[in-house]
Length: 273
Image 1: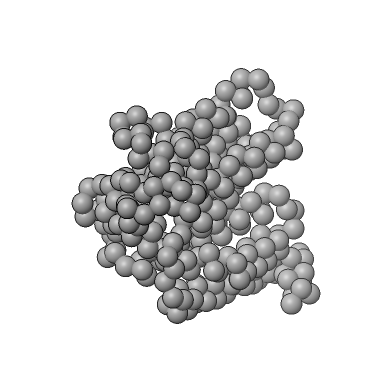
Image 2: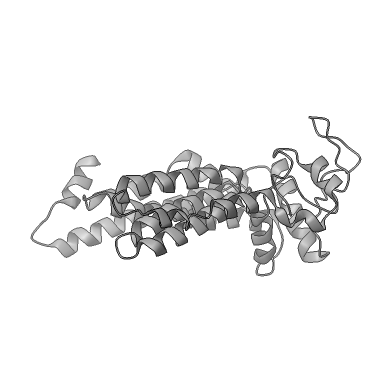
């Protein structure tokens, strides 16, 4: 298998045939990914997270507010905090995934399969981002095709793509942030910084692990563009915007006691919907 990929990467008398073969191999990997992901999502039993995370989006679509109907407001979290108001306001998860879900359910009917298909679509975005990343960091023509195919067929990747959680969306936005920076940096550094960090902010508003997108972008800028960076470029890195967005400063119009009591996985100020 490896020798086949190596042959595909060599310059031959028929470069168009080599390019077609690489495209076919990548397409085959993606088709197999889609088949395996659909098989898993159709056979895997529902998880409690899927009900918890789909509820606020369903409420927003049908009732106009983002409560979590699958959780009982009279109960308490394991850490002792009560759930008062959780049926009206969702503060315990980041807000972007439920908002995207709400828009998605305007296009397709609300169901467990619809929720899981949304994760699969974000997985395709992640694969496209990785293809662009590998094209930018490798001089070997085979690497983007082989690397993307291997990612597509990875067990953990398929598992995430078939599960109705925000993880795949957050990962896709993180990978897209890096891809945007690498693709734009040579032509327009300012645009690269602004576009990539906007995507990083979206990743943070999807899952707390989006902070890894910020760290990755800072590291990439230091590796690839240290000599080009100026002090005023730092002002384009919206650190305060990330922090303000992640803290959910718009909660000033919401009941603060609910916000504090319902913040479970995140510290007070960690998220708001």
